[in-house]
Image 1 (cartoon, rainbow, N blue to C red):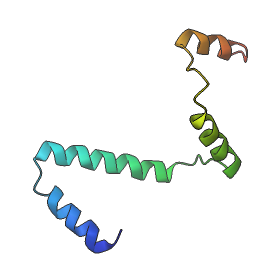
Image 2: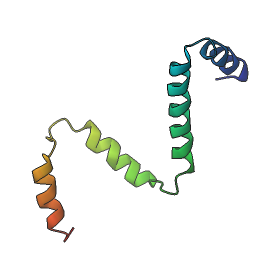
Image 3: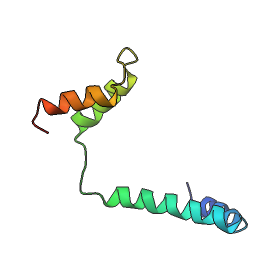
Length: 75
């Protein structure tokens, strides 16, 4: 996206209601925080996350099942 395209979008945002502008600013701040995070996945970890997200055969754990699995690690 070019600077000019961003300028056009930001100009439209300036015409939004104040509450909506606040929400947009909060989302941008969260994105910025993520970029500053000291935690980064390796390429291998990222590939594993993508693989697991694409696997439709796995079922989500309930909170109780998750707790049981964590307890195996003494957590």
